[in-house]
Image (cartoon, rainbow, N blue to C red; front, side):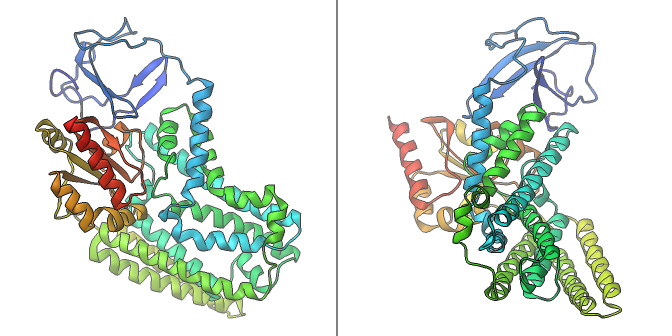
Amino acid sequence: FPATPGQLRNAAPQPLTRGDGLILRLTPAAGFAPAQALRGVLELTDRTGARTALAIVATPGPPHGPPHGPLAGPLARNAPPAAPASALWALLGFGFLGGLILNLMPCVFPVLALKAMALAGAGGGANARVRALALSYAAGVLAAFTALGLALLVARAAGYGLGWGFQFASPAAVGAMALVLFAVGLNLSGVFQAGGSAGLVQGVGQGVIARGGHVGSFFTGLLAVVVASPCTAPFMAAAVGGALAAPGIVAVGVFLALGAGLAAPVLALAAIPALGRRLPRPGAWMVRLRQVLAFPMYGAAVWLVWVVSTEAGSPGVAAMGAALVAIGFAAWSLGLAQQGGRVGFALAGAGALAALAALGWIAATPPAAARAAPASGMAFSAARLARLRAVGRPVFVDVTARWCLTCQVNERLALDTPTTRAAFAARHVAVLVADWTAQPAAITRYLRAHGRDGVPLYVFYAPGVPHGRLLPQLLTPGLVQHAIERASGAMHG
């Protein structure tokens, strides 16, 4: 925070990285004078939310010593370029545990059918085949996690304040995922055949079909990560936050650990062949299973259309309706072509182009207004939070997003309930709702101040809890009420 206004663009991202010390990258404003000293206050926030204010004088040239002024505390001029080995192993461990727990989060519900197909496709085969299909699925998961992580790192390096699940902030990207899941559902329903899915219908074991099965398993793992990525799990939030502040090679390692955790249930088939032999052998029952598993795909597509409606309004819904019809027509035409129809491929291409045009329309649609705070709450802002805390009022901050399925489940089952509302009212708790759907910079900074890079995040402030208490990412009414009572006890104590 510069002492003289107009020197920096305070709303711009301020990425902190390790180099020869700590490197804070700032965006100059029109009033910035490169040859003069930059005076102000540097505020550092650790992962527990504790803040340290340091009065500094930054002068041009190499560093000359520690920060100056009455608020200055010890700050190493030459911080080590890398964390200790124990910290790196802890970060990798958090990544693996976070990915493993992600299998149990509501965000993964839409891809449970994909996991079931991956397991069923490997069942009953020879040990080598079971291992190969499981590893193909795991490879898709690892590739997707690595690609998303690298995209996030590149965006951060370019100055964009993106967070985990950034692809869901674009209604066009959400619409594209809805079309992919709808097409997967049509494939499972037998409208057309693609890759390993055709092999599952015609029988497992032939050479060409086996190759298709590996492609299908890889794609299944890829798609599972893309759809499950909007939310974070316990341990995963700390791992992603640490990865984005670490050197590139460490960050890639953390994202691979996340992928290994998510793929662990299927990887167990490769590591323990006896588990694969316990699965039922593929047969005619798999045709019916495929058809049944199409309906979770349709349900996931409907959920994503709802997300588009919250981000792009009714014009976005109209465009998504047109795109779904076009994809349905393309899938039907492709099915005809696979049965020997001469014009099927051309019609399928026309349908796909129409769906892409609809996505372009969504991308050009002005964004819908931000979600209004519930009747019992207020919209979040850092200034409003500071004012409420200054007068000693307890504050519950709910950082959420409309594309976060875990957030919606918590809201329905734990936050927007008579029991929780009564607990908030009895203790005059102010509820601040921070809508991160479009990933606004102010809320992104608040997330990072708490060591998080994704939602949900729940923080409860009270006079006896000055730095706030973080709540778990899966809530129950009893858990929220217990946190309020503990804070009230600290206030009276």
